[in-house]
View (cartoon, rainbow, N blue to C red):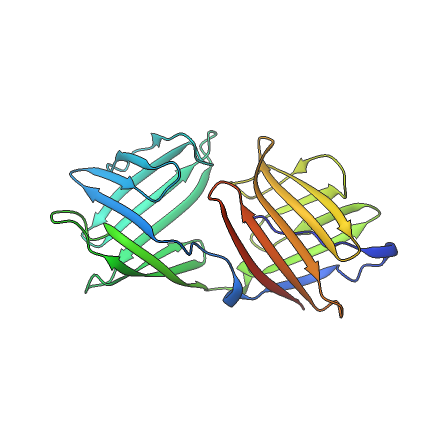
Length: 243
């Protein structure tokens, strides 16, 4: 997701400092996820557009996604590894899907995150156990590193940095700036709406993939953050607390 920069009114830095995201409010896929792994093929029927590739562990080109290639490796009867890469070969996402022994729940693990899912439709006969329809219901982080973000404003240049390596320096209401350390994005622009609100557009090759709107509370201690994923057509809302 794209993270938001703070707005600083009248030269003050009340939005500067380190903030911690409330993991209980973080957005994650709420709509059902539908997969079919059978006869050496992988299908993501809930992806937009749908994906159908060989499940042979090799990079294969896809179109219409924020990444350029995908590889699907069947690790065992309950586990699948999925790797997405950008056109320069940089890994966009490296995920491990594991189904429980009873086949009723599954986890999607990537970086320091884990999304838990419950089955709402069975796998077709003869397919891998990961097949079927799944409803995500919980997201967890194994480290606060994933939850912290630091902002700083010098003049009209706003800086964002995170312990996990993402950063940028953007002029408020200015041109696109480089987005560093986040495979999904390589550019960002930040627009000041008013003294308590900014909008961040996170981009790849100039195309907006994520639009985030942040509003600061009256006491300056919390943020309300609304993120619109333009690719998936979904919107999430979460909060952060100043540390």
